[in-house]
Length: 379
Image (cartoon, rainbow, N blue to C red; front, side, top):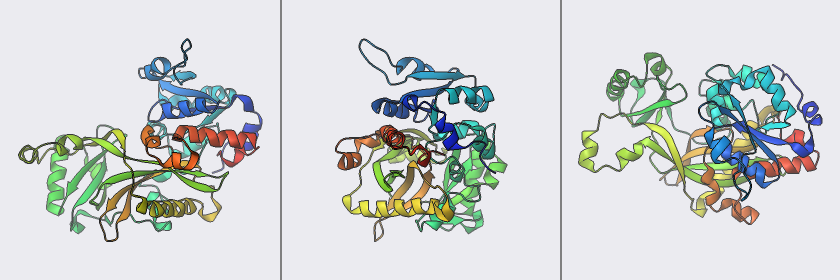
């Protein structure tokens, strides 16, 4: 289905001196706002009633002394109201370039299909608006298809519980919180059925969710998110930084002494994201990381597609081997959720100082604007 607007036409009508980076007020919105400010662009954060003080108060730009990073907020009753024609008209009048984050997908998907989102957003995206759907495992050309095309290693999958012959992780939709997944571990079909009973009993999953669950091998090793940035202007891939996740209630269970942990053996493991911490790589792994990222970018460009533009992340486990290697267990096809990537050294090795993902987005937009190439980085 063709897009409902033409990016060059929209951009031609913009005031290039007033370009505004905009995102949904969650996930990584402050990262985008701070990055825009660092490069002299405006920013706008779309907020939802009841969860706007972070942006409208605590981090709003103020003077005497200068502080804060958020230029303006656009309050809505619900995030999904962003597709209302009046809101879209307002965003266009503000010269908005939209930066999609995971919360944008999650909250709008409660009300709209991906096709409706792709067509209903009349403002240009920094990045690919059509690749967002590939994060969903039930899409035809999903992240697994991209990883396969890129020859990137990912966990072995099992079609049915009867095939389980090793430790697996089961990823099912959460029954009570639509934008979360319920995870559990199992070693066999019997163990799988036992865990299902526990989760069904406490309402974390339902039968329909279990029927569509992904069952995949549990990779043993430390996790690391490889946060990349592909620049169409430079035709180069950058490693912006690396981090790992802090998750509930896994973190609490991991900190328990063995006897207490055994007493909670039937406690369902919760892998809700609580935050991120910096985690560096050994230099011997950098070449593998870059090679994997470059293959992935090329895979998204197959068949003449625009492919990746800007930030994306390959979420990995480093397994012992030999040889020591990455296994990618998840993919983020937009700005990652961790603002701490700049506290790893990789962007400073490239740019001579720490550069956040938000600022790197703004850098690309400014270069594209000044070089008359905005259409090359927007979709």
